[in-house]
Amino acid sequence: MNTPKPWLKNYPAGVPQEIGDPSHASLTEFLEECFDRFSNRKAVESMGKFFTYGQIDRLSKDFASYLQNLELDRGARVALMYPNVIEYAIAMLGTLRAGYTVVNINPLYTSRELEAQLQDSGASVLVLMENFANTYQQIAERLTLKQVIISSPGELLGLKGHIVNWVARNIKKIVPAWNVAHTNFKDALTIGSRHPYHRPEIGLDDIAFLQYTGGTTGTSKGAVLLHRNILSNLMQIESWLNPGLKHKPDQQLSFLCALPMTHIFALTACALLGIAKGALLVLVANPRDIDGFIKLLIKHPKINIFPGVNTLFHALIHRPEFKNVKLPHLLVTIGGGMAVHKKTADHWQALTGSPIAQGYGLSETSPVVCVNSPLEKHFTGHIGVPMPSTDLVILDDDEVELPQGTPGEICIKGPQLMAGYWNKPEETAHCMTADGYFKSGDIGLITEDGHIQIVDRKKDMIVVAGFKVFPNDVEDVLSQMPGIKECAVIGVPHRKLGEIVKAYIVKSDHHITEADVLQYCKEHLTSYKRPRKAVFIHELPKSNVGKILRRELRNI
Image (cartoon, rainbow, N blue to C red; front, top):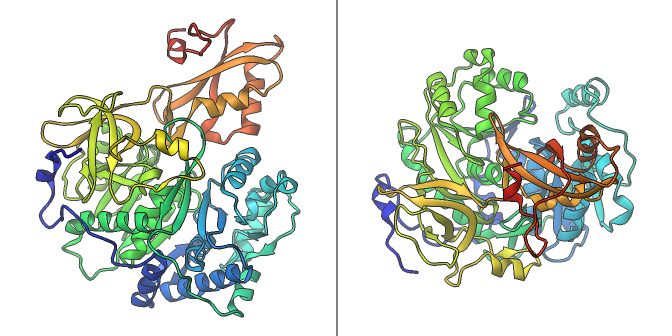
């Protein structure tokens, strides 16, 4: 397709239409340049302890040396299961510097979900915090990992770390008992420091991340993100953000990393972008602890960049204590992951003085596709315009381009687009148009003034607090529960979460209750995938070929 780009007229002055090729040969070269350039700056604050770029350089290099000493195959996958703590940053950066592929794992996953991702990715190494070691222990005997590395919550925090560990284990009791063969994270760093580091021979077309996503068809897939993809998206975001920073060229920025860095949004738009700008990354290990989060914000009035999701903004502004938060240096609040509600955005701006710049992206696009300008004075309600070097078309089901203003499927092309799905060529082919555009599964339109607006999404997909949930995944688990004959799930509106999962069940055992179903799901599904409601019916609506008609469940 060779279509005009009506959004280009909305580009702020100074933002290029194209970004060109990455200026670095790999993320490894990019990271080394940043570490050298910003060596004496504070890079990360984790649980009150600061680490400089020079320290991150040394620690990540030690971790890289340790991995290289394991003599893994070229392109080996290293799986990381962490909240936002310093160990994740070191392991992620060290894996890239070793020349291997990072496989990010949601730390909330159940053992079933963890096993599935480890098996599919073919990971050689698993690195995780001890809080999740029991989850791994349940499946350890079925896996053939070459190495497991486990850290405590306070591993690298010095004397304070002993207190952090004691509180986690004995007061908060968030570390279930575990016993698996492993190497301690700190020991791995020590061992790595005794071995020479060899800069790997990798290039732009080597794989940097396997970022797992529900995709557009419901099965769990690893989006193959190359060094080229991530570096391109960083260039795109930087070029878009820079006009909003023009009055602060010499000031070190502070990025608030509240969203999990194992999620693509925070990984690129917070962690890696922050490193590119030489920023201080303020890590929030548990953003669900709103009281603790607000106390952290009070301590950090110099936050400049605040990426978040609607549910997080909503939770903060509805706490009376939030009135004590002063963020006079806040340059831009970025809303992604799910639709930002206007009421929430208006309330946020009234309290902070910063409008929420809503954006749009996917794991498959590294992730940023569209975003509002940081120069916007108010919440716009749309998702802005495509990044430089990004093309976007609206297609119907027959892949015919629709006129401006007509809703259809958002399809994307650009240098940030993944190389495909890991070991799933048929799935890759299914999600691409004949012209090489990625079919997002989201329904949107291009407005008359050249902005992109989300209208709807594929009907069966459910979005809970920004996380995509696909009915097939939940139904697969539910169908294995004794006493359930058939089941189907849909999303229903929820004021705070956007949507929640609702299950419809045909019993084979009349004794099972809704409480039984919800408890079973609690044991087998991560929190956002769990049905919040279960309804028992005599028969599921089906087509003449036996396909369950989920859309008709909305009328029951």
